[in-house]
Image (cartoon, helix red, strand yellow):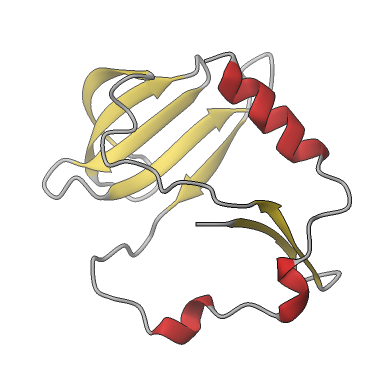
Length: 125
């Protein structure tokens, strides 16, 4: 239940959020509005579409409910956006070693500016 920051470029790994509770399955219900269905343009999947926090659009496969993608408008003029894609999501159990972390990852991050911004954002919503 911890959240870590990891950079393969610098080899940095540290603990950002200790004891972070898992995301509940109905996380979208209280922070978003369903806007119907649409074809997600990158994968072509027919998806349910959810708008949240004024700048994010979440897509879930209409048949399975599994995540397809999330689009956030990063440009204040709305010209370009960022996408987070789940190309292959399944519900099979992972090998336990897949989550093994190096020992240095348990040390708190020295600069938690991102963490403080995120915590403040969560408190206001």
